[in-house]
Image: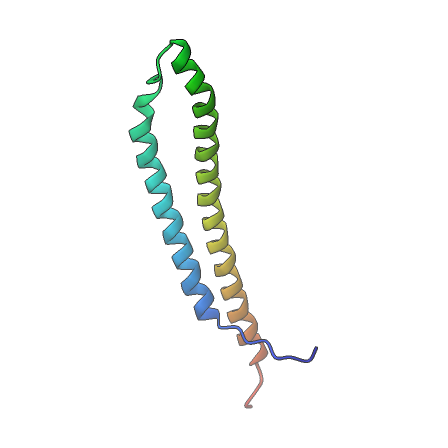
Length: 102
């Protein structure tokens, strides 16, 4: 149990920035995908074959869209969490040094 824990706040802050960037890039890609696929709504037609295909396609397309939204929010939340951890560790390191060396 008496093991030493080593945390590098700078690494946490760098990682948080990377998660934020990746989240932004994913959100941008999802936006482009939506704008490209949006006009294709109703492309399957109103005949029986088109409706049959749409009954399987449409729910899956909505599920994929929701999953991509969740992933985007998840990346942003991880980045925010890593940033908060880095800042907290920096603060606790600074607080633990008060009065030392005097």
